[in-house]
Length: 361
Image (tube, rainbow, N blue to C red; front, side, top):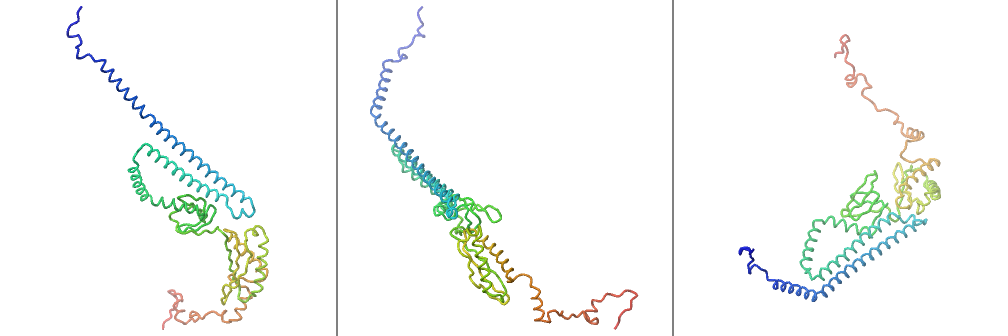
């Protein structure tokens, strides 16, 4: 049965198989030629990028491990010195540990940023990307961020220099101006202090303009003793020297005292008293305990030696001597109420009742 003419395909609608094959062959040939011409460049570029990444990773790992070993060695040295008798007084292991960990963290972060940042720029340069606009944009963004977060940058830089210069550490008693107390944590942005009443102060490092460290070097314990001006200075010096010698031999004051207790002499002379100043060089932070112990022992020694300290109640013999010197001290001042006919006595007299006789002029 013959097909209808409407169902037969037209010659114009039949695809040219030879033309399609020819175009496909030409595309494949061009692609192969392009790959054959550029594969060496691509391989070189890939190997270059891979080499940059590998070198950056190895260098970063080596630097971080070296810094970690250095920090560990510093901590071991602090622990070794802490076991010694003198090292325990001069070295605070926790302070050294936190300081070294903070320095190590900063150095590791800076090293990673520099190495990885340089590697990233080298990779972009290998890909023939123009870094000029990128660097310009990064510079503008850095300036904007730095201007907006200038307080944060100031705190961070101040914290870095405080740690590097070892201005204070954990366990130190400092006066930071805005707050004072014992340092319990040192950070790159905030320093944490514990006050005398137990409160915790969080002080930003950028706000600290001056620091008074009360725990570095040595401290001075000073005691002022007020006695009567009639006491013998030679006797007072002998008694205080006996107290000082006994204090220097007792435990734990023999370790807290870093020098002899000295009687500096008269600090002030008045009509009713004179002040004798006593001083001693002590371990940092122990001056207040030494002062309290000195006052305690000096008071007991003075009581035993019969030396009276000014400020207490007067003795009986002193009261009698004062009365004998001034007989009028025991006589009361005259009063207008002592005369019953005086206007003051009449004004203070009770008002008579209805049946009582009235006094008239």
